[in-house]
Length: 141
Image (cartoon, rainbow, N blue to C red; front, side, top):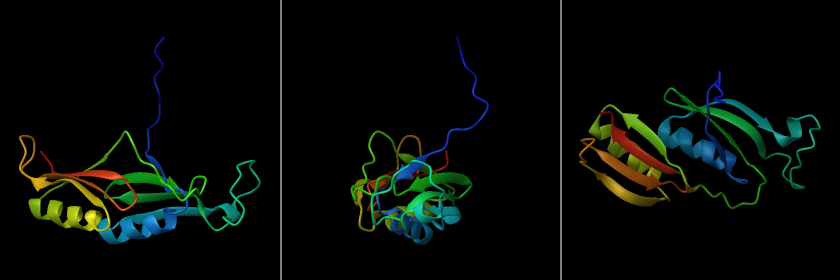
């Protein structure tokens, strides 16, 4: 039996105690705008446990990059965010934008593929930012 979903899938990033730092980084690097931010201390008792001393950590945040909404949190506040098995794609209009965004995301991160011409885009690059989130930045086909 096939199930049809009447909704949308959204990306949720767990920064394991570094969410506020990540949101500020994305504000600077990508012009991200935070739509909503809820700290553990602001939530009613839910049974979701935050480690002692993490009351000011972020339980849930919603932010926009371009016209895409992303969600984020501090998760279990382990201090070790792990992002594996996916990448975030960011399509822009010009090669200059690719370079500007790529360089901003690469600050403190790791270049996986420097920007260059590919068979599918005049400018494409891959970078893991300082939190380990992998971004594929390209000129729109």
